Image (spheres, rainbow, N blue to C red):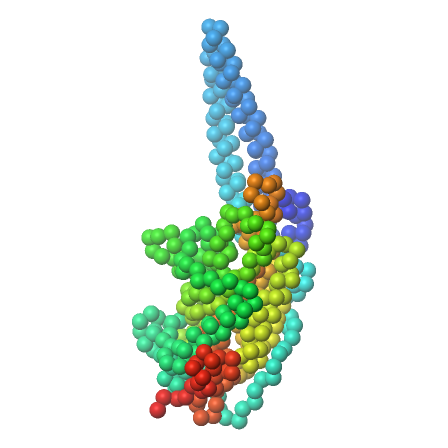
Length: 428
């Protein structure tokens, strides 16, 4: 959420930022927000004056009563003032609600290094790492290969739950768990504290951590309860210190969170009807940092390096892109994506998303640092990045490590988690 003071004192900065995003709707919201904020501030002054007048009338009525003088005129005057107070309070409440609604929906201010662009086709490539493999045999899709290995079942999962779900079996299920342990071990060794969060959150907490449009497009709601299934462990980790003041000496706080994740995935991409890349349910290891504002850009690069090291360790070619103004979304001031090379598809596809949300989430969640009772505790900065979304990593491994005999070589970094097994072989 943006600071209303920023909008009051520097509306042109916010306007220019929205123009970079090519967001005409939110430019109109900004203009209406500024008008309603101006009206609300004037109305607050009028309301204070009316309340003062009503209090003065009450004192005057009491004095007239004591003196035995006629006070009916003053009573009528006080009643009229009371009616005006009620009307002003109702109008002010409506204005403040609309102002907050706009503030919760206007996006974060972009960092100056975010490239200008209309959509994901104009994201800026930072670098490529690793050379794509060249093979002399016909490659299988990851879903076809997983089924031929007897390691996945998409038909029966669809029968039970619909598209976007899957059964993993045998060595592929073990490989999924190996990816989880591999990412967790790497990050714990680097000082990140392992978190297994709740898999549900209430709406108040969820409104603090994500774009409100996600409630329609992403979140699964538990019927009849104030509870939503989490879309990523980033969300409960972000909300963990809601309405708290973190002692400055405790910063930075670095978490590695593991959870199942649940997403509707409504949008242009939809879900995989037969595959592991885009699904309604998946495993993810997530990085999250709370820090002081002056340290957040340093930690943004650290989070990116962690993910790069994970995919380098898996021997998978990848590239890093700087997400452009038209593709970045609401929360982040800057975002990198790591995209792994998919050999069968002959393209790079997103596997990690690394965001510096600056103080945007913290303002929504009211998370500050300093000493309780001291004035002007500043907001923390929050950052997040995927360590590994196992479904997407499995797709990359199946595509890049498949062999002509139908087997899949297990990356060296994962073999210790697979009881030393070096290959997943077809079922005979």
